[in-house]
Image (cartoon, rainbow, N blue to C red; front, side, top):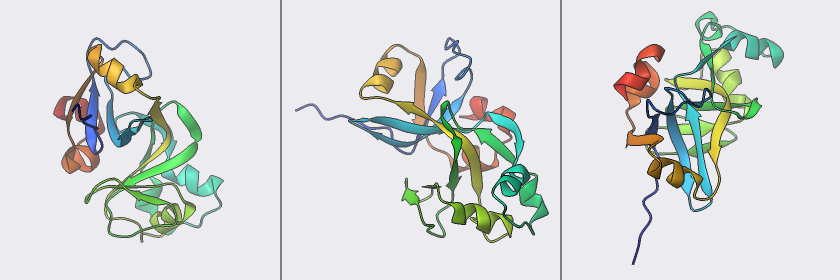
Length: 169
């Protein structure tokens, strides 16, 4: 019997030969991978936007000036108008999916409101958009040597300098 190994809670790292400008030298954290496809957040592609701009657009009062200066990431080319927060799982928000014991993905406003006032998760990454693959698509891209998968590292995800994440992963 053939059993499929899914890559939830792992990184996929763009191989140097992957020339697609959207994914060139990216590290993507896979939040969901199953028979229907995959969803991941690119963790090393900061946008020009700071989190303070998101607070302003959402009319959220800010008391955490440090949070306002955090980079917002380009999480991928799908639904770039939607926000996704990867974070440590010490709390559950309105729309939280636990990816593992150490990482959750939240898409609801309440986590952004908590971050704005310094009451959010201990560690987090905010992204606009996600990377998505249809049924069997990611597996084919891995077989074509576009991606290398590796175990997830909380240090790489939350603590490593952005420009070092591809090399460290």
